[in-house]
Length: 377
Image 1 (cartoon, rainbow, N blue to C red):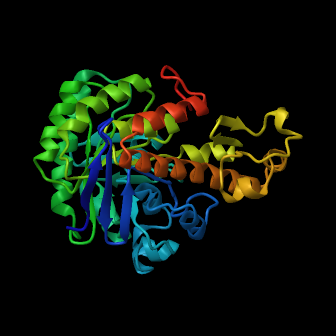
Image 2 (spheres, rainbow, N blue to C red):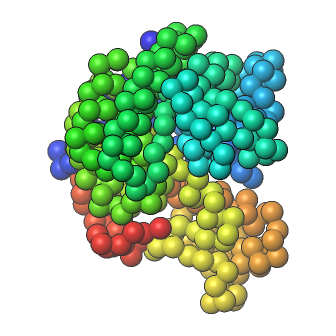
């Protein structure tokens, strides 16, 4: 099998798991956060910088790369790793989420989804088979089954029909997957906020024996306590010898609370997106560099951070760059935010090793200024 999971230990304080995901392009230490490189680049970051901050894996978007520059061109280049000069693992999503979130004109049928390109309005069709064809051409280490992403909130009956279609599509993905020897295909558990539907989806998909399982349909606007309830219901139903991936989650509190509930992998555009607006994550909480109080602050962004940005530049300078719309400012804030989350995940792994993850969470929440009833970001 292309992708396998090795469980090293389970935290005695929580259900968190320390592990390794083995892939054709290297090992991912888990729990892991995956920076998002939508267009085959993590915005403003070079592959070398991502390696400096010890990113073990990045995510790229099937939908965007299919539309531009096209999966055939990337295949001609020797695959996505060679195209973007990244020799560590890559996960590609299936394109489903973008079809459902970016396209206004879409029609879902059993065969797949008809929709219009968000770039030029062209009529397009994405099916489980097409999603596999594109991801096989990209050559990612981990690829995702094509699923339907119901909106939140949605009617119970609609979510039930949707998850049953997602299961049928997952079966078609398995059949169409042309490279199971060197690409691991993960299925996506759906079911909205309904425990019985989550149980049904998990049972149906685990019977198909995928190399890994994702939990989709969360972090879509629901309150965090609901997300955690769904995780507590769903995670125990997933095989303990396979990786578990929570899609679209990237705030520090949700990464911690997801890991505590047994999640191994996370991805989100949050750290890079907020960095472009001048918002940074620090050990003492969120810092908005556009705030006037930083105008004459010549201290580092985060005195407890060892990243390139914090070692070399002041809040005053960073604020000036962000206010002036300088690309270098975005590079520095992006570097810091990604470094901060990757460093935090290293701390999570260490705390699991030492059976003190709840203590780590309490210390982190206190420093970060989070309380259990707050959303954080």
